[in-house]
Length: 69
Image (cartoon, rainbow, N blue to C red; front, side, top):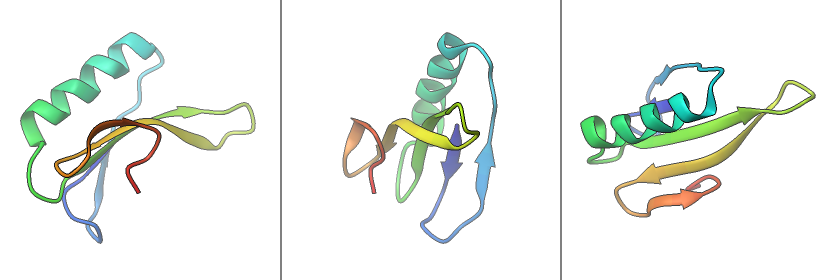
């Protein structure tokens, strides 16, 4: 999961092997930091080592499946 507070800003990242824990952390980040230009993304590692965004949140879109961008 990543939290980015402005489009060109640094990322805060967290990793959890349990999907349920990651979902809870995602919702917690939205509750704590969900305002302004913040974008929060929940991603899953694919078999080839890449990350695929499962869901994301921004103040403009709310929670969406996939990436807000």
